[in-house]
Length: 233
Ligand SMILES: [Zn+2]
Image (cartoon, rainbow, N blue to C red; front, side, top):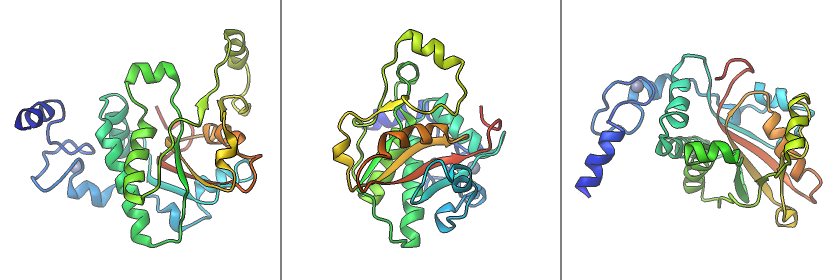
């Protein structure tokens, strides 16, 4: 066990993932100072929030849960980069737990039946080795006690001619990106969709297309961060 821990500390030395400072023994992933200064969205406390307003009309979400507001070159960007480019998947789980604890602390009457992470493009999945939305979902699932389903929502398999065509379509064309082979499983369920960073909302809109015709289904969204389009890279 000690050997494993030593090995892990070589890969992830005990530095704050948001500011780079060394962590104290009692701190994990993020130092106390960053914890206090990271820009929380608190969207779950205010339904009239920028994310809901942006998606409004397109995707009738029950609730939006968003951990942080993304700022270019800010600490949240650093966290997202640590997950995506330094493959720090435990950080994604940690942020899922963090959001779960935020929600639980408010005692909002939120009851979700299932957590569904947005599937990653197979090419990206092969590159990175994991889906960051799924890792984030694991943390949230653990704290909120809601099961995660990472199998049902799938990327639609498309032919190369369709890929070529899609290149020239505007991003508003959101149909056919995902598929839900067994939709009846989600009838009368409250689904919490999980994404990492939401920008235009096109991905959420695409996923919504798979659920919108289902009897009695409700959809909510949770994400690590929200940013205005053009701000994220
Ligand atoms: Zn820090």
